[in-house]
Image 1 (cartoon, rainbow, N blue to C red):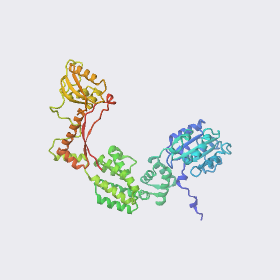
Image 2: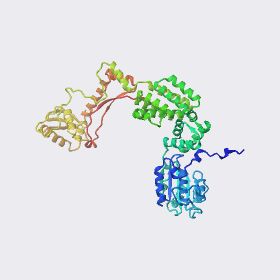
Image 3: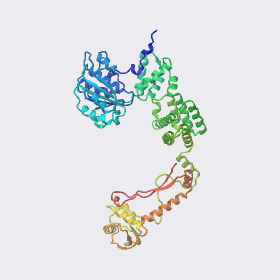
Image 4: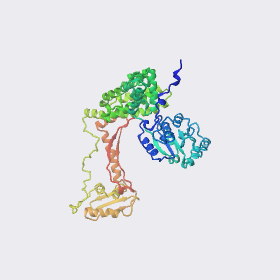
Length: 560
């Protein structure tokens, strides 16, 4: 009896598209090439880029068949597929269509050998077509040898390049080609394609099983068909969901969801035990961590966009998982878990024993996830504290007898009213409120006062003071107070400035704030937390374009 097994053709080859209409998910490319062929506006070089298995080489062969088809329609967007030229191109044996692998022919000598035949006209077809796969593997010298011919090839020559690494192709080559980016195939497109193949093969398959294969293919039709081939063999002609789950490791995915729930619950003992069982059953530590990262992203996405929990791309297990956990999991927790897992990928690659490293990562996450959030701790501390309520809003300073009472700049209605300055701080505050930025900065940082009274001041100036400062200050004082001030300038070292006094007061305020029972409780809960004051300083050279900003005390909670 004949051995028919030798005649079997894998699905990825058997169902390879033969015309533009059969290409999946590449509508823009198909429309462009169809119009170019119909209108005889062919480019001399094309470059096709995309992930593996989306149809780069297949598209190149379809272009070659469309241009060299010897059927009754001649050059056509729908090659007949039965003429000698179409058959020879489909089987990679056409004398005028040269398919080359750049990975094995990278040198400049290889390229020169290839280009030697460019000047000769095609033997059987209309065009001599060079299909170079993985063109990014060519050496720099090989690319340089190709440039001149690629820019001005003979009319009968067309180059078609394919690559998965478009960034590695020199710009000088890209600029001479018409580029097409082949898209990843969607889960829906692949699932429909698999259903069609199953029907043509006379087999049966569960919809959920085909959807799982489509998701595992990650946008690659070839990868998906290889998985489908394997699933058909495992199921003896029937593609079942359970078989597919075991085949691609999705049986462990349910266990991964359970592991994630244990992490969220902070059950460290159960987490370690569950991880040990999964590892004994063959789970890869790296793949496990990547799956947990994917689950974290999925849960966060559903948290932000609740409608995504009903998306058709999700399995029933994923939908149920998201509906249960998304409402009760704060986004802050998910964000923290995400960061710890991403950092864990780096640790995993450095660890001598990956499973030990993963166990430590998960224990750290489980411990962290069980801790209350900063907001929960603050709320709890507030409930148990009798001190005044402190919020995270900008604090409003209490008015004291020492606080400067300064009027706003005079409006058109009250220009006649004058201002009296009792202290340097009052004058400094007025200059800032009136947006006299250069004056305000120098007044606060470059002067120290020996005496200050209405109409008179005695001061020491810094070397940074410019010549116009005193004149400009006198003009402002005349406008606001209605009198000319007696300003006496002393020589000598600069004493304590207004800025120095403000800094001292700021430090004193920090100490006072840290002594409050509520703040002390927060600092005790968050080890390493510190009180900072946010200020935007006004450099003299930038002060003219920058508004003055008062210090704002804030409490920063830092976690190791």
